[in-house]
Length: 391
Image (tube, rainbow, N blue to C red):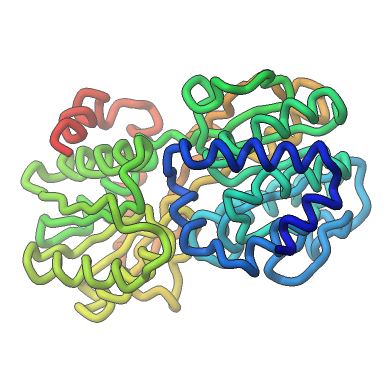
């Protein structure tokens, strides 16, 4: 096993880390990104992640990727993900957020991301960057919160310049086993705002008054997104009905196609929004087959509206606030388990460009309602909870 051999070469202490973490994996709760790991955890991917490589075959031993951050800087940043940077969803969104942050932070150098990192290799992947004294190590999802507890504790003592940023994680509930949160911060988007933005678009674009949503797993964040989505759409038209599935996983595009086809046939769904990465691509295929001029998709979490996406009318965009983390590291204020909130005020949550299928009149209404969402006056928590209580 190449992964085991790499861990052994990295030293006894890190071998102990992996042993202890692997013992705890059987008791860990399956989360959003672990589901992807189950589909991607091939022997090749395990070996690649364990040895510090990436799916592109590039070395991550201090080599910067092309583009932003390619010149030698004062700080280094590395990203660890369970998927790939071209997945069109979760991991690509994180990668684009990192590139955007680097564009305005000239002192920072990006190391080659570790893609397809299986849960069993997550600690070793982080440790390879700790050993290089990388200033900021980013974990794309809450599974890293459980995987990195011992690595963080060791780094806090032996590598004080290393910092960890874990996304989609609430430290008060998901990091209670940490010995220290000194070098750690997390990022949480405003899921209510994200869902409400999608709901406004869906409510204004739907002619059949039937909208759909596919989630990869029934996570708290997914429930809030859908509840706000339907609540906001019903503020536009109370008669709107919502169809949903929270168990689609994140890798099977055909499942998205089949679900959407069924809803179009049985419920006359004409607008979709998704939270399921590759599965969302399948939903778009079904919408296009039903007629791209009458069936529409709202993409997430990156801006993909364009000629090559005929059903996408706009996108809900998440920025993972990596630039703020970099600023805090430079200022010496990063850490202590703080949570960075991404919202409409700081650019963490936004809508992307509109396709030509969204009339100027509808765009003006979306802008008006978006201002109310930002101000917190469009939908209430009670209205979101009313939908959530039915799920």
